[in-house]
Amino acid sequence: MQIIKTLKALRATRSLLDGSLGLVPTMGALHAGHTSLVDLSKAQCNYTAVSIFINPKQFNDTSDLSSYPRNIEADLNLLEEMGVDLVWLPSLEEVYPPNYQTFVEVRDLSLPLEGAARTGHFTGVATIVAKLLIVFQPQRAYFGRKDAQQLAVVNQLAFDLALPVTIIGCPTIRTPDGLALSSRNMMLSKNGEKRANAIYRGLFTAGKAWLKGERQRELLLCHARHPITKASIDIEYLSLANPATLQEFNPTKATKQALISVAASVDGVRLIDNLILPDDLKKNSLDTLLTTSELASKGIR
Ligand code: AMP
Image 1 (cartoon, rainbow, N blue to C red):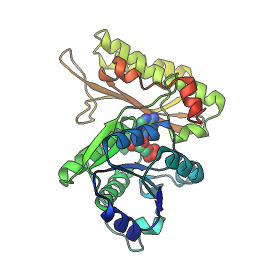
Image 2 (image 1 turned 135 degrees about the vertical axis):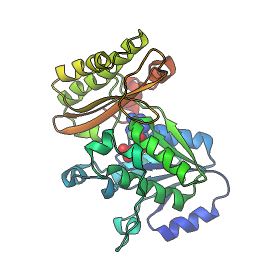
Image 3 (image 1 turned 90 degrees about the horizontal axis):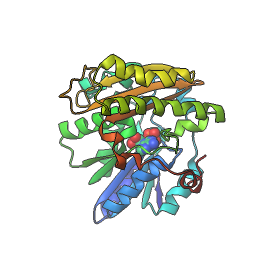
Image 4 (image 1 turned 30 degrees about the horizontal axis):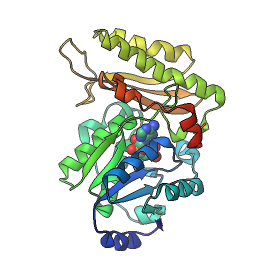
C-alpha cells in the first residue's frame, strides 16, 4: 500500500494506474462503515484509493473540529490489511495552500437539515469532494447513505460539473441494536452508546408505521420522536422530507418514498441518522446490521 502525502506524488502515482480506480473519501477514525465502502470499491474497481483528511472547512465549530477522533496508525494498519492500493494523507496546506480562494457551492440541496444546523458545512464538503474528484480522477467514488444529504449534494455536484465519475451510495452499517456506526461513537460512554440506540429505534418505529400505511406527517414524526426523547437524547432536528429535494413535506397515500432523518446529541456527542422509507425497511437493508461477533472481529465495541 502506498501512503502519499503530496499532490505531486499523488498525480505521479495516479498517472501510472492502468485500469479503473475507486475512491473512498474519509476523515479517518475508520470503522466498519468505512470498510464496507472499501470492500465495494475493491469488488468493483481494479484499484482502490482512500483519502484521510479532516476537512476544517466543513466544521462550523472549532471545538467540534479539535475533538474529532483521530486514529491514523490504526487506520493505516486496517487499510493495509484490506489490501487498499493507495492512501492519500495530505497536510492542511497541501489541500488549502496559502491564499486559497475557491469554493464550490451546491445551492438548494445544501440549505435544509445539516446545512441549516451547520452553516457553511456543505460548501466545505462540496469543495473538498470536488478537489478529490479532480485530483484522483476515479471512475467511481463511494459515499455512505448514512450521510444522506451529503450523498445528495455530491451527486448534484458531479452531475452539474459533468465530472466523469459514478457516485455510488452505500448502505448504512449498524450495530446489532441498530446504532449507525460513526467515528463519533468512540466519544460515547457505554451508557451513552446504549441510549443512542434509541435513535434507530425511533426511525424504525416511524418506518413500521409507514409500512402499515400511516402518512400523517405529525404522527410519523411523533413515532420517531418518542423513543428518542424517552432516552433523554436532545433532538436538534427531526425531519420528514422529500428525498429528491430534501424539503419538508406532507406525504400522501401516493407518496413512494420519504427521508426521515434526525440530528441529536447524546451527552454532547452529535449524531445523525436517517432511513429512506420504505426501502430501508426491506430485508436486504436490514442485513447491514452487523452481528456482535462481526463487530468484535473488526475491533469495534
Ligand atoms: P466520514 O469519515 O465520517 O467523513 O465518512 C466517510 C464516508 O463513510 C462517508 O461517505 C460516510 O457517509 C461513510 N460512512 C460513515 N459511517 C457509515 C456507516 N455507518 N455506514 C456506511 N457508510 C458510512
